[in-house]
Length: 167
Image (tube, rainbow, N blue to C red; front, side, top):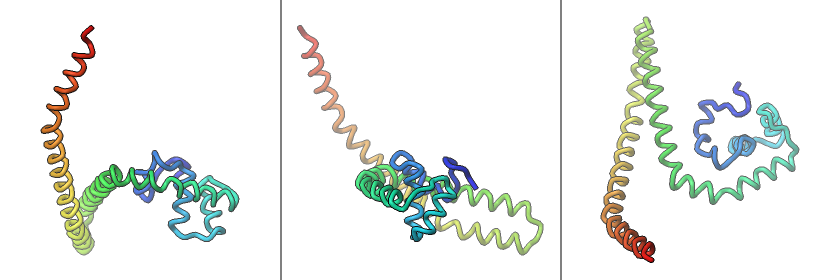
């Protein structure tokens, strides 16, 4: 079991919130997401290094709720891409591990099972690859628009600064 501050594969989805929630808040949020009763949440928090009273637990949850708008803005502008890339990276690592296991395995039945798992990954990879292309096309379009607008604004800024420098 990881110690406080270390992350696991289960924590990867929460890694995007590192700058928005501290470790205690993330641990409380995980207990809420898992719909623990207070008694179960208390045990969970203690095992993860955050013993607290029931009142303190609910104060932390209220503090998280107050951060909702900021978290939503962050997720809308940055988090979706981060989550998308994390998922794509995970799929690639899983496929790589499956191939390594395939080549190490001697049992033909187990090799066939591993190949089946690799085939099951392909639709996921295709979907994420298509979405990546969509994101890249949108970014390219945005850059083209920015380049069309930028020269005018740059020349206006240069004119402004030249006038400001003259005595």
